[in-house]
Length: 370
Image (cartoon, rainbow, N blue to C red):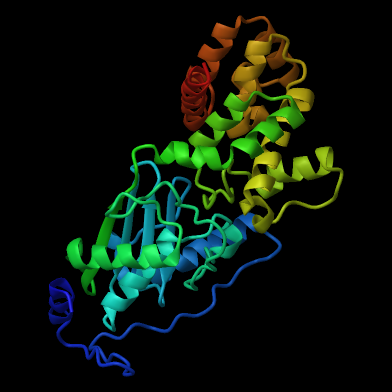
């Protein structure tokens, strides 16, 4: 057995790790129950799921060491919420850790493999439970992580070998609320963001052509909303790459574009193809319905981006409390003046920053094509 494996077992004094035997600790963990959800309210149900996960995970890990899934962050709990994979897509870091007191080395090694081979389709990821993901197809992280030999990790045998290497050479520990946490840190390749972009290039191209949009716009929206994280979720009830909210943008797309009743499910919006199609279709609605009276194409562009984040009402209220007067005032301004108003006078600070950020990213994507 590797030296660090032995160190790990020695650090776990007080709990038996004999095979086939449950660990009897002085501070046992409470059992995991099923999270209550309201199937008729998508925003409420996702908040209930996130709140439930937070409640159980905080009990395991403590307030200071709890990590929650978000728009730019993938978090997956396993083993009764005692083992965790955390991917920070903005920082390009992966952390796999465990606080399990029973066979922690085995659980950590298994979680590393699960993370390296995590499915590209969020439908197989079991995001809102501690169940293992269904490993099938090409791994989502393929090309975004390489092993200790600089090789991409596509197959289970290579993932297992890299996990063994990490356990033997990169294992770390820290004290937390319930004792010790054991973890490894993996640095993603420098162009990990571009690697994710490539995965969706075809879907973005098709959606741009379908709805008469520039590819740069869709790329910049996805980067802003999720850093190309298809597992992205927020407390606002938004899902996936373009962070679509089912009851607002999703409902509009279903009713006005798809000509079908109801709203998209979270499963539908976690599917990258459906998500990109829905987000792009909502821009089509903004351009051809809600903001169709904006005359200058550049002012239209600024208004659509702002409305994607803060709603059409937010855009118009920037100029006047009366919608008709607001449109007249908007059209009497130059595009630069419209931009200045939306980035300094919009009633929501987030929307002001959002337009700036999307346009910054869009410039990068546009220049990258030259």
